[in-house]
Length: 317
Ligand code: GLY
Image (tube, rainbow, N blue to C red; front, side, top):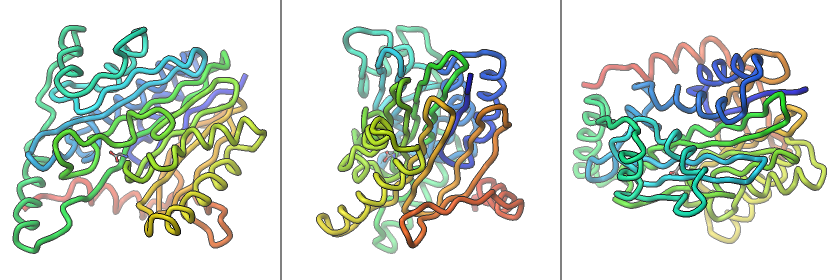
């Protein structure tokens, strides 16, 4: 039986590696998704997810996350949750609730505390410093405040044919309090059906919501398209439509997998992702939009990885 995991961004690679080991040992798709996302949430140098994520305009780190089970369609989600160590685990737990399974703000944080999840100050000194510098830059140079929205999104397939999907994000840096992106929204940030496949998104939530692109990719796979074709058609068609009808299209990138462990990706910006499928260990690729509306996918270079490592750990003056 096929198995695999695909996830957005280079930052997911360690988690995909862990998820692959779990799936190879007959672990479940749900555990693979949660494991992969927790690895990103726990790493302090990733500025857009979990611990170390960048805060909103008031300096408060509000996080969004979701979990979906592709067998039962159960969904759990949180938005604007604060001071909780692993939002993905809270979302997964909420997916077992018949009612109240999508919780926001104080209600989400209270639920997590009552359910026994770990309380943690998620705002690192480094993230606080970056925020302070940004606040100063914005007022000095009258800049557009918004920057950065890299979500970790994961789709997993286990050896029993079950698929799950999950997302986690601190959302748009300098967002207004209470702003929610695509990541916890079914159909926009994620969607999965074990009989068809799953897709997850990263990018500007406000624009991803306009196209419900995760659902659209899964819908195309249900019509018989391979994941790569489904991603190319859904993402580039919507990119052009949005430019024509809305005037511009923010950055967005999506990855998908089907129950055979075949995968696909499409993006309107340079985008990295990690995938482990059918017995192979995780591998990082870089993707770009090709001129003919077919995604160009290449293995990542060591030079790129070295520069990335340097960039994320660069000292903050
Ligand atoms: N894609 C994450 C966000 O826009 O919040």
